[in-house]
Image (cartoon, rainbow, N blue to C red; front, top):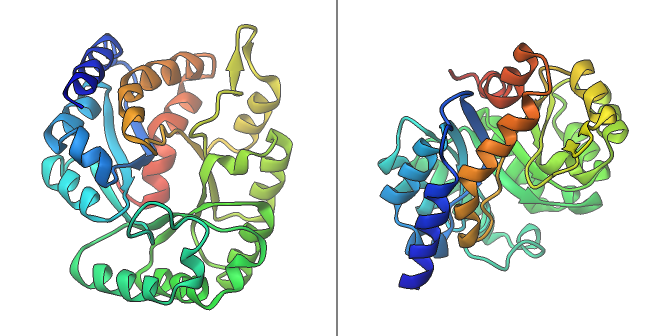
Length: 268
């Protein structure tokens, strides 16, 4: 583990040169219990600062990682509450009533801006647990960070038409499919975490270019540190993000890099 930590440190340092140009709001960060053990909060805070990440929407399994990172970097961390108490609950949590007890307890003790990232597909949204979770988000005026398909997304808005929803990974859908969802739901935003199809050796993907220009206020970037080893990638990812954003007009690039996430969450 010590040797692996040294490798992380070397890779992170190598990936942060010149990262000061465009501020980043990383809208998809996790800091779960295994990452806390391997990459301590002070080191994570340095990783984010060195990468030029000015704000990060952070959630973790369990929530202790988020709270520890918030204490280490209160100027950066925007806390989100995940319904997972441990790894391995992605496909079972919506059937476990104890999840609601957990959410209610954490909401009573700490402040959050979002619930999620949570995984749900199709009619999962109709389970009692998810319906109650959406009600809690409504009571506390929280963003919902949803990882799932269009069918589930539509059902979230059927349950709560006034919801603010961030669609993780833009649903891994095609640009035209993402555009269709954005047209259907004015209070939907989409993150681009763990996607690499926005640009390639031939430049910006023209399909994405059209969608970004059609919906300039609805997209944002994210790294998705879903496993401890993903932390080595935060610096290089910030730089590669700046490189493809440089193919867009400056104002649009800044919106996707920072302003859209800040506006979605009502912070600056």
